[in-house]
Every structure is written in structure tokens, then in C-alpha cells.
Amino acid sequence: MIILKQQTEPQLIYFIPREYTASALSLRNETTGEIVIYYTADAIYKLIDRTLLEGGNFEAKECLINSFDLIDTYFQQEDYFLKISIPLTLTENTFYNLNIFNKDKVIYKDKVFCTNQVIKDFTVNENQYVENNTTNEFIIYE
Image 1 (cartoon, one colour):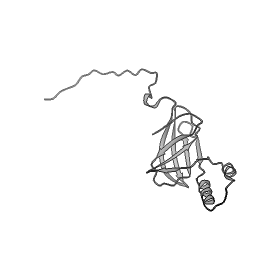
Image 2 (cartoon, helix red, strand yellow):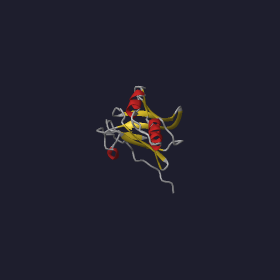
Image 3 (tube, one colour):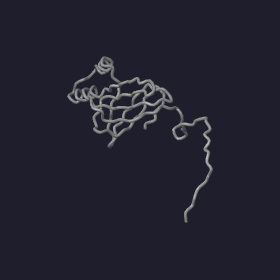
Image 4 (tube, one colour):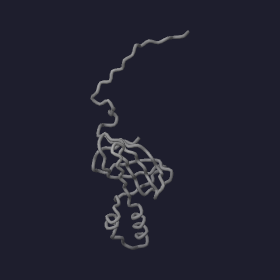
């Protein structure tokens, strides 16, 4: 499970995919069923790299990103991980289903939980007392 925060700044997600090329990320809210797909600008970055290597200039990056409703980020490989730093629109205390795609193929699936609590101190019983009733009866066989 991936733990993310409800914030407007980009959040870093690391994952081990089935293959190391990715183009989109989708989040399905488990409460409402709403699906949001974030298409990354990987293809545009590859085009920019190719153009710059050939000695040209690429000035239409913003135009292409805006025209195709892309997120200005891309997936990066680090060792055997892929990572992405992406701004997400999340609701606190909500679970999401995460799918990462390479074109039409799903290359990674996970569950995301959004919370602003400190992760090491997080408990699902926040501000609730849970009583554990037991009779402490046990049998010892010798």
C-alpha cells in the first residue's frame, strides 16, 4: 500500500513495474468510484531529447502539454524501480486503486491511502479507545 498526503505539491511514488516503460497513471476512488487518469509527458520529453540531440530547438513543449491535457512530468527508472513525482488531487481518509499503464497494458497495480497524519504514528483507531476483553484462560499440556 502506498500512503500519500492531501496536498497540491507533487508527491514521489516509487514502484516495481512489470516493464520499465510507462505512460499514464489512474486513480479510482473506492468510495465514489470516480476514476482520474493522469497522462504524463514522456513522449514529449523523448521528442525534446531527440530534437536537442540533433542540434535543434524545441519551443512548443507547453503548447503540446496543454493541447493533449498532459501532466508535465515523466516516469524515471532508478535501479529496478520506476518513480514519478506528480501532483495528485486526493481526499484525506480515502482509499484509491492505483493502476499504471504502458499504452493500454497495466504494468503495475496497488492501493493508495490518503492521510495527513504522521505515518509512523498513524492508527485506524485515532481518538478511539478499543477495549480488548479476554479471560486469560489457557491450558498447559505437559
